[in-house]
Length: 184
Image 1 (cartoon, rainbow, N blue to C red):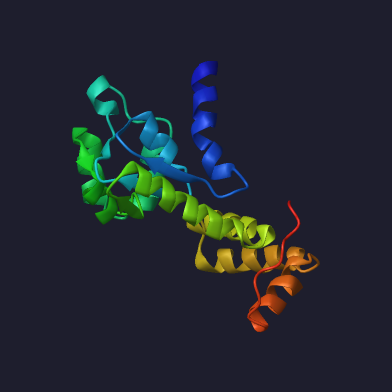
Image 2: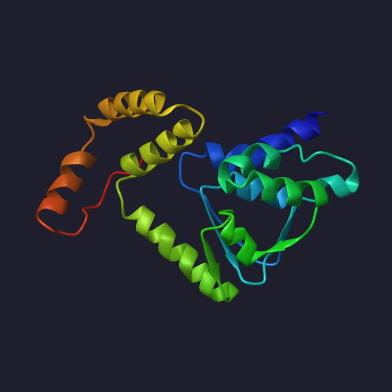
């Protein structure tokens, strides 16, 4: 039981990590792989990626997060139940169609470049704003709009004293490059 709980914690890490986590999938992503990528903030894959929620083939309900996270990610309950109950494989185009991934690339090299470009764009932003955005999006996923608005108002009030807001605001208003930000 202890090792199972430890594995569950590993699959939760991307969701609770204070930095955005980008999954880059090429090849096969079955079972535990789906558990981990479903906890990531952004998911990209190659055209040859193959996905499956395989647990029913081994006599289990997927128990490390897939069945909890995928309904919030994919949006189409019928499709999700079909792939989870049949354990059928699905490819990159289907993963894109049902929002499991946000980009599909022809090759692994193109995907790595795309993922690094996305990471670079995020890294150029205020770390305070990036962390706050991730936290608010994660909170809002499981709460009402009103609760989310209250949460973001409280969150932003706590961030008003950082240097990132005046630095970012000045750069945007003067159309200057973003300044270097302090690490958090």
